[in-house]
Image 1 (tube, rainbow, N blue to C red):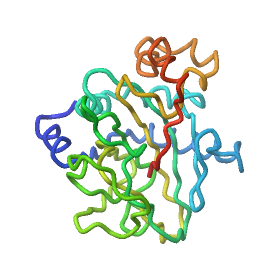
Image 2 (image 1 turned 60 degrees about the vertical axis):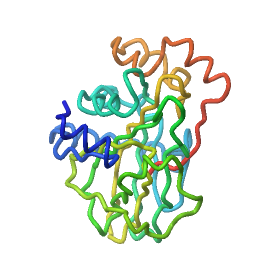
Image 3 (image 1 turned 120 degrees about the vertical axis):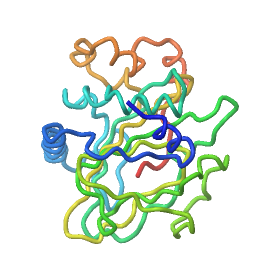
Image 4 (image 1 turned 90 degrees about the vertical axis):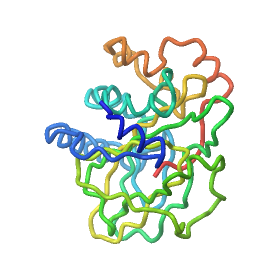
Length: 255
């Protein structure tokens, strides 16, 4: 669980690096399943959410392996989500982005889902799971510390470096938790190997999910989920059904 210092860093800077949060076994299991899915889905990989030039994507991962069912309940990550979002929140989506070798440009700086804090506070928070080392050369995420407190999203198409941005690097197995209102974006992968990351993304309880889990999860998966997983996926929540009926496809970049 987070220390008081961790909480202060997350509140002030907008992100917190948790080195070694993934065990060696979990890291290997995630890598193995991700590569299986890229092979199985081929050109359709990521189509449930978005596809992107210069990167491979996967989406709807809670429906695609028990290892992902475990990931969404990681205690320290949930603790961080509660720190940003308050006591009631839910999974918004679980995706993978693999930056292609020799990609040409950075992502623009963005806030996930184009989010700006409202009268109730922050409503999106994310976690970036490093399935490969993040280095200055292979597409590590750039972040602008404190920008979540500015009350605005960056202008569209902001590809240029921000004078206050920092590059967040780390070893495979690291997880970065972040207030997703903070300005951030992936950088170009100038190496000969892909750079893989998993994004476990949460939203405040009164907001729609980026991917409406109740419609996406098959009956077999839903039947075996524990009560805590069902709660974090909002599978039994009437408010979530009402939000989905008004449109749950929240758009926006995610690393």
